[in-house]
Picture: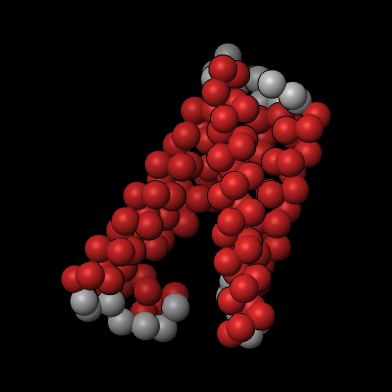
Length: 131
């Protein structure tokens, strides 16, 4: 039990996903002019690219906070889990398309594996813990 909240397997998918996605959002948008050259090897100088990366950060943080809320509030668990499955499935699909058209990314292949695992885990939870 953590602060009166029991961490059960049903909630663990949302909790772990939320932490990972919030951190990823911060990596993308908190300081893109420093992080992107160091992490991905490209410069971020255009205002539009900075804006886009910070918008992605906002999406990731908003979705991650919704998953945290769903993990902590049983009334919102189902919707948050459906959101998680759609997010993980969608991002996995995009990475698979990129792999097929652009080649294998050594940096993002582990992310693809994790996203597919979270996608499957979310589907499993939806089936096991019906609304």
